[in-house]
Length: 106
Image 1: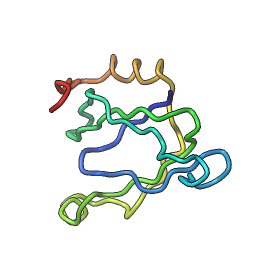
Image 2 (image 1 turned 30 degrees about the vertical axis):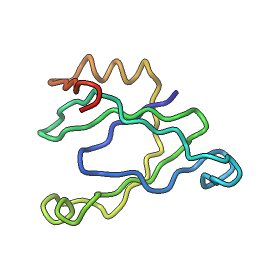
Image 3 (image 1 turned 180 degrees about the vertical axis):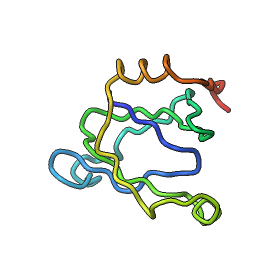
Image 4 (image 1 turned 90 degrees about the vertical axis):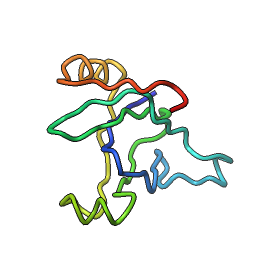
């Protein structure tokens, strides 16, 4: 499992695996990408922890609606190339100023 942090209000677009863009016909399923119930607050921004399966090597993310794009200066889309290990995710959580734990099912 690999991990990454993603700002609230952003969503995942295209997903890449070793052979290129994720092909649901070849894999016969969508990639496993789960938002976990942990987040950190960094510079006033809530960043949720996501877990992805090992086959994923890169993700495209972008603001989920125009309100966010209008209120927060952002790039239209971003590609996350640096997925982190479980150990790195724990280090970030341990050193974070604030950690949010959302109850499951919320």
